[in-house]
Image (cartoon, rainbow, N blue to C red):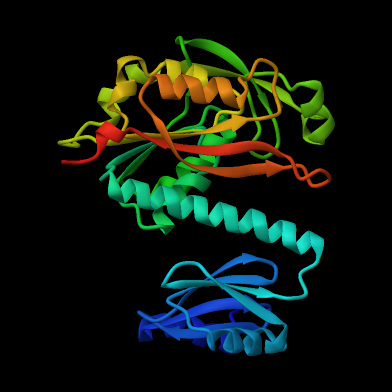
Length: 321
């Protein structure tokens, strides 16, 4: 049963008060329309529409000394607050969380600016990307593709109460066929086999199982997926564990209809046959897409080198009139 404290905190949003859990046992209360707080690491918060004195309030709520805090302005309406006692591990986690957060905000802003009304979420897993789109204010259609049967069922449950979130249990590729996917725990299942580097880095590759899946061409599904949208402005997100260019090839003549795309591009090959970053970007640029942002997805902790980037791109000629 929820505690009295928890019931009170759950009631406050109805009274136009934001509740932000800062740490276990500590919550920050702010009036709506004032500050918005986003945790971006174990000892760091991003505060929008913040003021310098606000660090003291965060510190008191977290039980920390204000003198240990520092803040960095991120534009006229946001500040990043950092606990000065960040260790190396905390620092690394903060970088990852901050990059993820800023990447998601960049995509959300791009979707608004280009008036996107349908996002194709290829390699959806259990809907993490779709949920983040909704959290950042996107209300248009989401069309998700996830071929692993158990994962697709979890995705359906996530999307079932959202009438504008459609789920297809397919992989996408250059040709339509039945194929086998290597099912891996988490979000790394792939049609491709892991490389020696992939096997050494990810122990989960040692425990995989094959599953037969349907592979479809994206262009064979576009008319159905855009049904009911009067003036489609689609956006393509690819996260297929080394298979992005194959899925992109299957879009055929529809490639020029996407106002933007994002794709995981690799500096280190985790899967056999996956393209390197330069090849992937050259392919997308040849179709008229240009880079608007690069955000690290995975980084090697020991060396600091980036293994994969989320590459966000758009078409300069696709701006709305």
